[in-house]
Length: 292
Image (cartoon, rainbow, N blue to C red):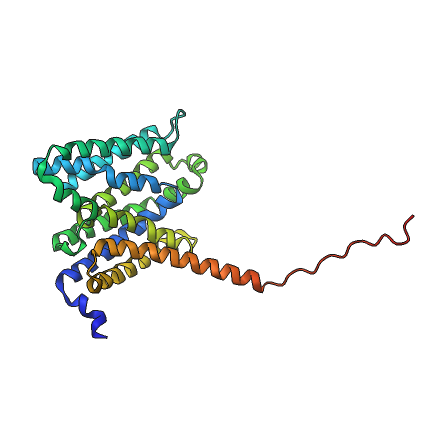
């Protein structure tokens, strides 16, 4: 029993655990909207589209979170401005902005010989290096995301499932969409600075996707996603401690593993139900005897 709790007696692992749980909370509140609206590609694009802002902030000695947020807000503004374009779809817009922002970031990085280590941290992060100040920042982000989600819950719900009805009810779907993009931007910008884009995006998508396999109503989805993300944090940190693997990548891998485990369990349960269900008796063909 002591071996199970041994990793969590170390201070930096405890900080990583708290940070992972806080991240799971923020991502649960945003991730369900992202998946329900089919914005997964936007989350991935935004997680890497922050690179130009991070690069500029790093070179100038500025705050990386501010740089990441500025870059992500620029991408979100571009997506929001072009989402009604008739010439091409939303995915095309996101793809173009993704490639453009990432290219600019790589160009900036290529002019800085000292940026290689920072780029690795940007992509993969180090959840075990979380400081108490990072936890405070994550806590503030969770509070902001929770407050906005509660305040805008009805407009978010209408925009997600019936945008036309949202406009009819006067819920201003364009403004609601902008607020939702801003919420995603804040979450990704803060998360990247603490855990890197890999774990941030993994925690945004996988737990919410897994939650949608077992729940239907939005509050239940958010709670289930949070629980899955928290469990993945505990299991991932425990595995990484004894397997000597990268903690952030291990947590991200566990979230995906949980998703496929639930998906497989659902498939097995569905197959068993079909095998146990009674086969309807064949209908006898009408007799033609006695007919002319």
